[in-house]
Length: 392
Image (cartoon, rainbow, N blue to C red):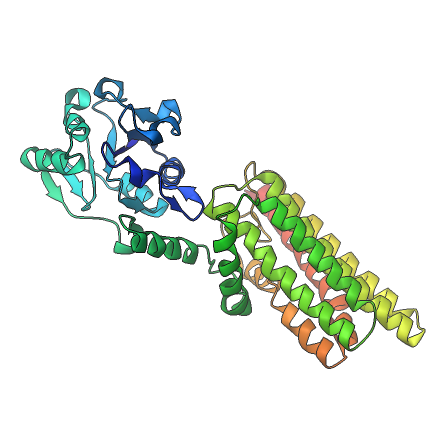
């Protein structure tokens, strides 16, 4: 069923022009509505400064220009509220009986009558309040289906900052490793909050992150002690900055397939470089060639695993792609969940610790075996998936 997301802002256009996490409020409302499967419409005055910024197909200054039909779902949101994407999706999934409308405080949902004449009230000075008064006289109100933290207020500067904090908190994923959630994310979110206000793109952040990681690998190759400790901390910094590209992409709706590919292969290039750097330093220090064999095994396992994941999952996604699992299947078997756990990057803290105690050679031995075993697990998962499809 088609849904229109309507924001009446005549006389309050200034609210739509305020910035929240790097985007104007009208831009953020636009993206939230589009992601939820709705058509965004902004009711603004013809001479309003913000009217020229909103694309013409989403800007309405006359009631007759509204896309109205009786089979629509109409969501009307005041310009001082920012509903989350999940909230808007839930509204579309909520059935409305005849003669009912949803009352969410500063947002209402209803099926319009003939010609959507109810919405004409939204063009008056009272805007949403006038519309709500009219709906209350014609329909039975039902209470909200969204949580309080899914309806973000943006009427004041304090509201705006609170909304930004809530939006950034929502970027933390449950699938991340323990150290990533507890250490890296708090730092990367602080960085991202500042980067969101700039014109820096997620892809530029990915390139910087990759260069930091490669510089860390170079330092690790120079020798034990200061250089390896400095290199391991650069490796950790790479991981922190690497979180910022995805955060900026999601918070500013700049996700792209190219960005996903750069992020994925940049990470794996850095990991391979670090493995090789450890082996190279070890070989120079001992005069033995065996560390290079271990490094080659770790690099091979890394690149084989990355190739399997990329061609099995990421090439099938037309948008993004955001790496979320080693398997493209929605149903995760036990071995897939184990593989997902092993693919997390908490091992970076072990690199830092072992660099401090001058034992990165221990890490390389484990990595050379572990990366090849991980590649074997991915090959098994891929073959099992192919066999399952043949049986089905």
